[in-house]
Length: 346
Image 1 (cartoon, rainbow, N blue to C red):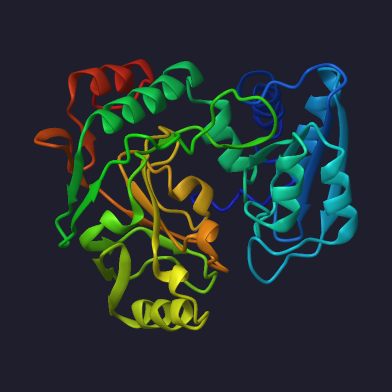
Image 2: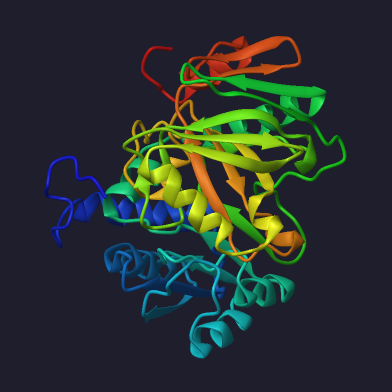
């Protein structure tokens, strides 16, 4: 990952701010009730500072924290060591800081089916927690997610373009449930604030998308040094072109020998004001303010992997209404929420 100032790995970096952000996590972002059993997991590639700060915050509000650290898995979504998967079955809330995240893994599905709320904060470090949780105004941030989803679902077609050659269309699934969190009965996943998206038919994705921010996994790519161009036909990636990173991505996706690994899975808008550039940590990179992010690899249809990529500074239309131009939200309602979030330039 890229460091901004070089001090981020210090044990005392943002020590006070981190405590405040962890408290906000368990009181505003994912409120923990007195007596809740809260599992906190971090792998050896993750940042133990955020895990320990969160455990302390859980205890301070009356929850019961259990912290588990385990070796980093080769890929996300793999079955973790048995003590972690067994602990997840007894958790009311599972906060996952692992770099090789547990979202969509067998342990995740078992925990959610049992009523656990899984909070995916993959790869979060002290710097990220302060910028993406501690500082943003979460009320307007959550309202932005709801408004973008509502406006998306009211459209029939969504189109986006970028200066690098992206020109992609998708058809909205009017009956689709939002992937981002809503209060529900039983277990469900919750993601970091600053992201929303339409529900679109997978096979309706058609055109070209050019990743220029990042791709992860595979871990060998991360921040992009050159664009990766994907041709999408009937929802499937049929060509991947560009430089060495594109060639590696093409080999990696086809190496699974599973057609579902090439199927578009979702589209997302990124708008966390604490994220202004790629860092190599996918959790925040897919929330870069003004970006769009796409997931490829339909795990629900049997794909063994799920990979996310980021497009910077897109222009986006809902039917014939321009809502974002070159990474800047121009629709009046969305621009007003950007002002409420304190985003510079609004």
